[in-house]
Length: 255
Ligand SMILES: C[S@@+](CC[C@H](N)C(=O)[O-])C[C@H]1O[C@@H](n2cnc3c(N)ncnc32)[C@H](O)[C@@H]1O
Image (cartoon, rainbow, N blue to C red; front, side, top):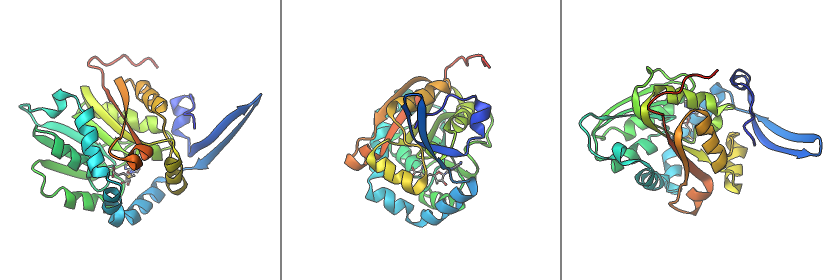
């Protein structure tokens, strides 16, 4: 379950998701699982897309996302400002997190979303048709975002990073496109019995608050803190969120 502290070049080549790891004296027993390839993930989410919104509503995730954003987003993000807030949702799915944002923000928004799955994007486009903001969606991989450095004020991602053998590669890409002092919010599948059930189907990492926070801190995000997703017992058991800021003065690359 640990994210190993291997160099990034080694991590980039990882193709597996750690499932279990324990030391017995000098022995370490570990079980890893082959992650889905990008093609498999795209195919699986294309197949899941028609039922995705219904599943989220059944689990009350749309309301849970609204509550989370109300609690988590700092005032400078939610309140009115002159320029539209530039937002990117990485792995937007059918648009649930972005729609929740439009309900809790009083500020004008300029919304972008990317996803691997064309079917998910089609549904996101449909679900966002009545939103009173500029919306731009494109098919892309979160590990190689098609945006310039320092483009967005807020980058969000929900239940996407855990699919990747090395989540920190995607997280550093999100930090790259975030402007200094911008906010990054991520939701993860939790390390819980329900999380294990999700792992069985989707081969994902399961995150503890400490792991999520250290993933953020390793990506040079500051003020990283974890929050439960509190709407109901299911959401709380399934997910947790982590929020942080890109420092205003970027640290020198120590590598
Ligand atoms: C569990 S769904 C979550 C969707 C949405 N964020 C939500 O909360 O409902 C994961 C989404 O991430 C997308 N995804 C998975 N791996 C991705 C990658 N490497 N790049 C972009 N999108 C990815 C999938 O296609 C899918 O739409």
